[in-house]
Length: 364
Image (cartoon, rainbow, N blue to C red; front, side, top):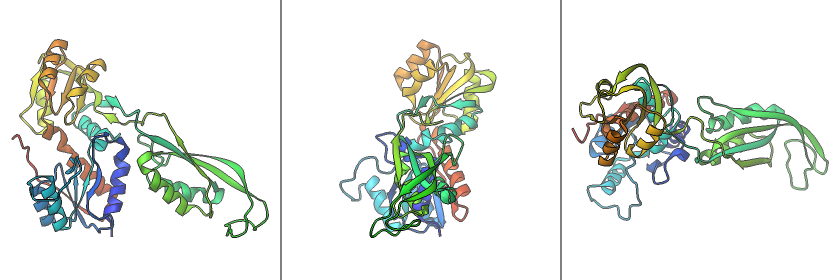
C-alpha cells in the first residue's frame, strides 16, 4: 500500500523543496506520513469544494499547488479561512501536500509545462536558481556493493542533473581499516589491518533530500561504519529557475499570440499592454504573480512577456519599452499545475487512483 510519505518523496524528486522560495511553505502541511493512500485528489487550492470532491472520490490525500498555510496558525478555530480548512481536513482524515514555488522552478515543472503548451522551443529559465543549495555526497564502498548503493541513492532522489537521472562518478582505490575490540566487521578480522578494493562513489543531491539520501545509502551499504563526505557546491541548479524564455516555431504578432494564449489557457479574460502589432518570435513567461520579472524578460531579449498578474507600473513599462505584456490571469496560468501533478503521480504511483478536481476561476 502506498503511503503519504512515499508520495511526498515522489513529489520531492520531481520538484525538490530546496527550489521553493524562502517565504513559501511546501511539503506535507496536514496529516500523517504513514497514512495509506488509495486515491488522491489534485487541485490548485484547498477549498471546501475540493474537500467535498476528495470525500466523494474516497481520496485520503489532497495535493495542491497553493499552500493552505503560509504563516503559522496560532489558533485552530472556525474562522472561515485556513484554520477552518485545516480542521476540516483533520475531521475528514485527509492529508494535504502543497507543491508551490518548487514546482514553478523545477526543470520540468509548471513554467516548463506551460511553455510547452504555448509552443515555445528550447525554453530555458528566465531567472536561474543559482542560489539553491546543491551538495556532493561521496561514499566509499566495496566494489561488489557499489551498484546497490548507487541504486539506493538514486531512489532517494540523488544524482539528478537536468533531464538525466542516476548521475554518479566512481573511481577504484584501496581502503584500509583495523577492526578494534567490540567491532563486528563485514570484512576483516579484529586486530588486523585490512586492505579492501573499494569504489569512491560520488553524486549530487539537493540539500533538502540529503537526510533521506544518507539513510538510503547507509541501509544499502554493507559496512558497520561507513566513510562518507558531504561537500557544498556553487553550481547553478541545472535547468531550474522561475519563468521560461523560448522561441516560437513561426513569427507572429502580439495580438495574434494573445488569441493563441487564450485558446491554450482556456480563458477569454487576457489583457494586453503595449503594441498589439509588435512582431513576436521570442516569448518569456512566468506563471502566477510574475510581474516583477518583466525587466528580466526585457533584458533577455523577449519580444513579449506573459504572466498571471500585471500591476499598473508594469503595464506602463510595457508601453515605454515597446515590449507587449499579457496579463493572462493567475488562475489560467496556474491551473495546468493540476494536470502536471496528476501526470507525475499517475506515472510514479500506478497503484494510486488520481482524480483532478473540478475548479473554476474565482474572477470568472
